[in-house]
Length: 185
Image 1 (cartoon, helix red, strand yellow):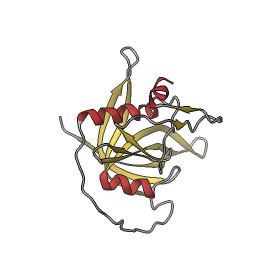
Image 2: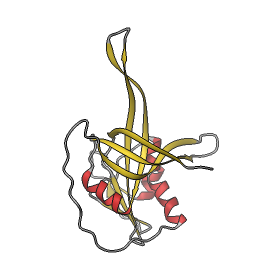
Image 3: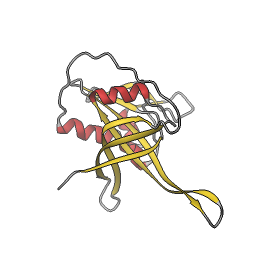
Image 4: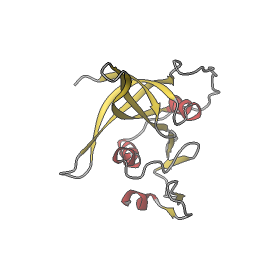
């Protein structure tokens, strides 16, 4: 099967989340919302078309740069490999479009930007299938749209490490939840 490469423009729907695996590999995930806007000649007004939300995964240095540069609500251009992720129990299967990004940048139609080259150090490692599956489980709440937005940058979660209690950003009280409790919610 051939890979499908896609370039899209849209707005960042939530703060990017950065994860670090036990082996030091980093990935940043963000959601990009796109919609087709067209001029309706009958009403004489601009109208929003269908909206599609993509999960975008940025690995290694690209992920670091996205985590420090991109914020919720900002317009971006994303280019990368498209895949459709399937999840959920039998009879209730869900599908989510996901992009493994090769490039992410601000959409300069809507503002200006300044390029700054980051300082680098250290090497990169590869990630096991088990760690990829764990990342899929950790970010599945985005696709289900039940209670998104628990961990966000600049807080970095370490996947594969023992669970630590973290406040649920959607609750008004100070109650905390472990990863297992959040997954059950």
